[in-house]
Image 1 (spheres, helix red, strand yellow):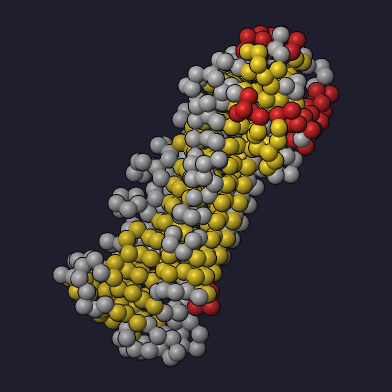
Image 2 (cartoon, rainbow, N blue to C red):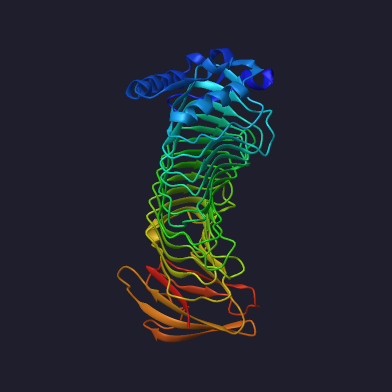
Length: 485
């Protein structure tokens, strides 16, 4: 155990990671910051009782089992509330702590809570009252739950280091939780949120945190099962499998805001409710930076009201930036706007499955993209979708701008409007019967699809194809509107 704790990564006040010896931690900027804030809070709350765990027999020497002493201090705290204080030290705990049932503060001076030997299914801290904050602790555990926030409002976890645990912070049936300026490392799920009793409740705020894993590609930083409003801003996600996962089982109708984050993970965000018709609504994803080796964003369920705007996405050439729709076609997002983003070095900028409805893709910059919009997952289209691809925004694109998978016994209507001096317009049926597509013009200002429109060509290739082959439209069209006829 001593070797485990002798060298640990600790985040400093500038959100930089420093590897330090245990005996040197007291000089860390984080410790100084936490102590200053603790002293400030104690001054402001000097009319509240301070319960110093050392006054109840805790040693904090890294060897003595302090579980009983800390529980005695909590028992006293639960009589009146106040401040549960861990002076600087290394407190070894062998069992779950008594739940805290009064409002107040748990404060440490960058104090270590070594719970690595407790039973893996246990909960370490349980906050069963509203208005409880935890700050200035370094908490290390096995599996199980580190901090459980249970049926309360306005609790806070701030300026902590948390390592280990299946769920590091588990928020259940609670509202207005603030999780700020923490460093999370080595987790299965770092923050887990579930509000089954009131799916429109939430308004949780998660900002200024850093996530990292010693095993790249493992762990999920934030998992939402059911929640209302959720604000995720100004965080840094490193090395984990996912920055954000939504797997809701009941409609969550409030707001999700994901803004100004830095995401350097295997995958970025995934919306993937297991149930048809269940959705997360009113999603805003703005001004983030994604650099991933997997997929930046996967919206695979019925979520709706989605705005993806002003982000920078960077891939590795073989991955997809944004997935829309479920592969089996049973679920589909709707009312989606994807605009003013930069997408760099992907096989697919946007890959679309069937049943996408009211999707507006406009004014994005595409650099080193094989397929800007790849709809080869379509077996049929429904609803009205506007795809606006400007030639000036395509930088070093290696492939085609649009691709449609043919399918037997389906008919599509294609509307093409050209930009510039040759503002030509054409509508065409694309019918596929027995694997052979035919093109019937409705309005064709300049002839059929193979006729050059000034310096701007529309080329449809693959007339003699088998079912499952593709039709490729490669043009610098201002608009590509595709819908089922």
